[in-house]
Length: 387
Image: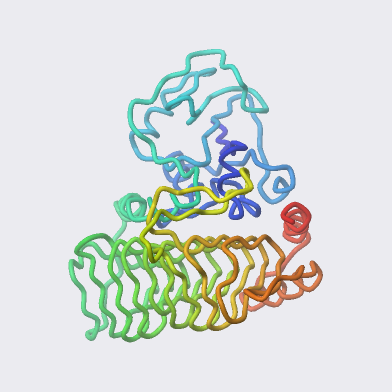
């Protein structure tokens, strides 16, 4: 079967600004992206049904037998087995949400030739921004089992590193530890290929550190946190997700937050994740063009790709920052900052596209990567859309 991961318009809108630069399935929740989770269960490389301006980077492949999978759904073994039983023309749904469908159509049909089967379990569906960090701990646990069940961990050789519940800690090849404390009593700890945990770092599981990523000296990593590949992390981090290629290398607190790719938080950047009156947090919703009550007391910073903060930046509870914005200066900036903005509490001006691309090129070159024309085209679309 040909696997296609599809976006639905309402879900894409609810997950902006993170979905400005990627399909929904490319969100990282737990150790893996949603795409990587599906790949593990179906052992095939999927294609994507997403926005047209993303199609060159994330193309769609059509055959005579297409398995359409909802890109917002985090699969598990029971769901994967139910989907594998679908016959041609059938769909699997939960509370009117299509989870999967098997058709020959080049687009997901509104009506299905066969049965629409109601799935009996409760799937994890990432259809709101806060669900990324809300489900991150359980997804680390799930992904840990998926990844490590047939593999053996590299040994912890450093005599000065202290571990608790070592059987719940997994090191990929090349992972390095020096005089750290790893506590996996309440959840697994996964250290990716060639990752580093430097001297004095303290990590409490569930926790995931991606390939080539580094926990800096003295870093305090609380539970339910994912640091994606090629990141640098330091200070205090709690229940947060960095997708990849992003840095929070210095002191400062990051809690109940999600950062996209190529973000950088300057030294002593801090996020508030709890209001002083303990009220529910309201978060900017791009579709409704207003702030919505997320029904949670804890919510920090949501930051789109290529955005940055200067030293000593303070982000208020429930702040949303778009793509390629640069925030700096004294005081709290507003709680919603659209894409390609330059400034802070004193006010913002437009971050000129050409200047933003110059910065992006420099940043990516530091990781031996190139900002190609496809990436520039995606960012140009965001520049024009998010005003």
